[in-house]
Amino acid sequence: MGRSTWAWVAAAVFVCCGGSSSSNNSGNLTHNGNSNCSAGPGQACCAGGMCAAGAACNGGVCATCGGGGQTCCAGQSCSGGFACQGGGNGGVCAECGAPGQPCCASNGCGTGCCVNGTCTAAASTCPGVGGTCTNGSCGMCGGAGQACCGPLPIGGRQCTAGGVICANGSCAACGGAGQPCCNPNVCNVSGYACRGGNCAQCGGAGQPCCPGNVCSVMSCTADHVCGNCGAAGQACCAGDSCDTGLGCDGNAVCAMCGGAGQPCCGGMMCSAASLACAGGGGGGDVCQQCGAAGQPCCANQMCSTGLTCRRDLCM
Image (cartoon, rainbow, N blue to C red):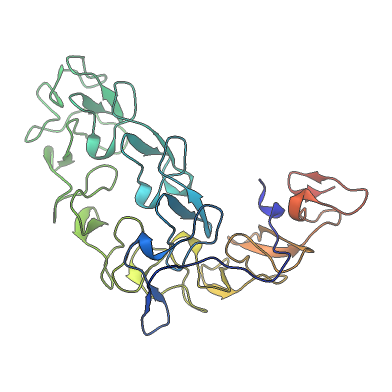
């Protein structure tokens, strides 16, 4: 469905955070986990880019995530047996771990080897690297404590075993407290998240957001750091989300929303049937007049009499 098919015809209705929440000094909501947010697929994200379990905030709207063929959840995470392919907001979860499939998180390929992002079966020759895959090692390289494998793939030398990453020319343990992050930017211990290439404590003020955009204080900002966001004049939170009644403008700042020329409200909604949410040309979606020739299509791809909706424009 095109962006311009969304309109908010009635009074503003925002579905946000259920359960218990507390406020910090800025008035932002404090989220201690996804259980504090009841926003499901198709609903506006809660403040801090939060959605209920099994959904991810994308463009201020919660979408089903984590399963095969679905959008990756926050932190480019997927359900077990799936890996995020494509990265960013456009990442999609694909089956992983079996020979010929993408490697799972932390180079997971079972007893096989992760070579150039793809799983190679045990006892097979490691493509482009050489050596026989044995317990994650491609012969003389790629396993824990061994040299990193060559030749150089895009992005540098590589390790082929699970739970290790190439550091200073050798394959070192990753994912633990203070250790380098595993691929793709994964930490394997609770209370830690990837920041600057290493696993650091998460959830506190100024710390990286924990997986799922979770912060123990404040909210998860668009930069994925726990801080002040979401209120009027403040930076947008993760997933381009803002507090109730506000939208994320083209400068990534929360502002009044829904009126003509204003950013779209959560759920890509506008305050009148004559307005549609469409690209503002400056990096944010804006509520614009719709339905006339050359204007965005209104809700349900509607245009003025004699015009038709083509590629989200009335012609």
